[in-house]
Image (cartoon, rainbow, N blue to C red; front, side):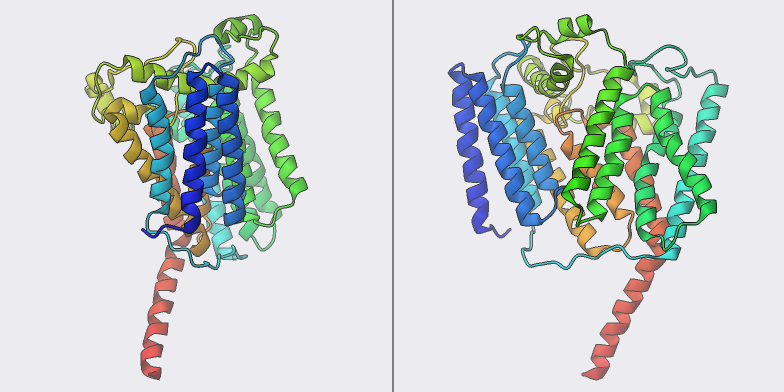
Length: 450
């Protein structure tokens, strides 16, 4: 791995600010500790974005979320928060370094000419078919769930997304329609002209993608479906205007506000749960703060109270769930999350990695994710198959919300990635063959000319 001259500067400033934040925390200065990391996250994000020329460059996106999220948690605005164990500080640092090393691994720093998505009737038709099939399957599975006696949370009066689904495998298929808005963005990008008869499917399909998360009272799915579409739009429109960017970000904020109102939480109950030091802090501020800060607190609580590692069982949960092994052998998924408070259940992306393997696990997990992120960064520059942007968009969501949950220990995540892989093959299979044939012909022609 060749090291850039600026890499030492990047990691040097991070380590200095991280050490200063740690010392400030030990000195009982939480506001200073958090502010240092927030400033460093913003600096690194701007620096990396200017280098890459993309607002959603994956390393910059992860840095802003992870380092910035840690900085927000370090402010210690809730009385539930405690001083972190030194192993927690080491773990959070190793995560950032591991991701960066993986991202830089095998990196070539020559300029790469990016492949722009072109208008293509065949590609558009195949994307349209994927949207239609996915919407149809989601509706069919939804009807099967109802026929099997599965309650719909919203209709049953449940607005907090805590419903237990008996047919979990089928439910993954039902909610897979949340990929449709992002797929529609790609369809519009490559379509040569809109056809009215296709709009009769696209419009209800996108309504379905928003309606099902509402019916299932899932804040996560509702934010995901909108965020995924917005991220995909930004990626495929590289020369997006600042005004348009502001509108899209405003849309995400609006969706968040609507989910807060929609779930109709009791304000006094949440104030009691969050236990904010400043009692008059508005809920619209305290709720997102705790959604970020609490996850780091749960990680620290786990580090302090974990009796033994589970050696891969938690990270293999998607395999146990998708294969049905968790029903045959419940002991495989018997470990429980260690939480500072039962009501606050969200975790960071790396919670299970530490639970399974400790510091070794989180470093190599972060390293692997860094490699995967770099592969996707290169893929969107070289690949003309538009579905690759769906992979990129999902990774951007997972990294941008790295403080929120254990994405890669979630069966739904892997189901959507597998589904995206199938669509990638269907949309671009003939093109890949054609490209390989053209490359071989060019090589032969070169030999003849010589």
